[in-house]
Image 1 (spheres, rainbow, N blue to C red):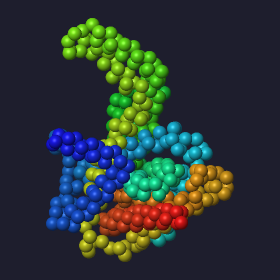
Image 2 (image 1 turned 180 degrees about the vertical axis):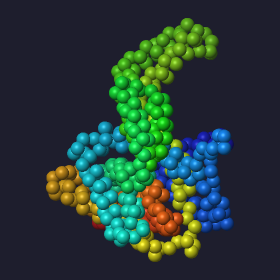
Image 3 (image 1 turned 90 degrees about the horizontal axis):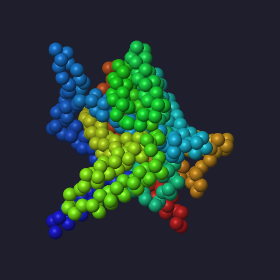
Image 4 (image 1 turned 180 degrees about the horizontal axis):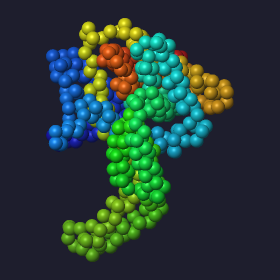
Length: 441
């Protein structure tokens, strides 16, 4: 009975982790836990933990960084690698494949970045916080998917596809914004080394090298070069993703023919033996099947599937726990410039208005068309959910501010992101629930 219950529990756990909403729920739980810990008696230990140095000494020279930097620069590089792989897959085969299919979500994403960015900048222009305009530009795909799955059938498949492809295009936009506006003084020597490594990666791709090992090894050196160049190191992960090959070593027809031969060989060997032990020919056949099984898979998809669970269920929750913990006290100055108002209005108002206006103009100008069955009201509702900007917004916050007020501005911005994302999520949910009720009357 206990075994059955254990299996039932494991089966339920597996179903839970495979659901679209789980990653978003886990992220939210980690953010809430971080806030609780940061404002508890453990607050000082929590803050000190992320500042502690992790590395090693070589002849008195320390090689390493703070735990915070290991998470935000190294661990998040894997998150950006998955994002890059997802963008490449969508551009080649998914909803962003071809100009007509890509036009609407890309234009919508552009509107969803321009709207919040302009609102924030208009409110903070001329202040020491104006550089934070990139904070409300991002959409968090994990949270957005979580809310969509909670809404269930109230949201059509077409709207879900539109929002997901918009979020992917938005991620690409956020990466470009980070590269252009949130990189420090550029070292052209290191940038030259990075360019040489990229050239080698492209050459490997063109030469038909399908093994992922050389790409990942060169990716480490590319990260080091980009990190030292002054451009944010996570950009290296995205560039690496774009060089990962798509075509498999063998096509599916060849794989099926080889598989048939191996299965026949396995069967022949089975007929010759009378023990439970595998025959030598059977072991060899199994080995060849395993090799061909890897060879028939697309390297890009194989890497994305291998890394995606770690990104969703380990890296992003750790990032959330390390970055969302803000001590709420005298240090939180909501009157600091208009950081709070800029982020709140940017995500809650700027996102849906920007997405709606850009898509409306794109259709009227004949540049793009809405998916079949998607109404303008649903476009606006999807835009409201696009205002959930947790992970990328937090990431940009860590890069946005400098000077004396940087720590205070960062804390205010993080609280603002949490409040704005919550408001956007609630508004988007209520919007679709009300729309669903009205459509049934």
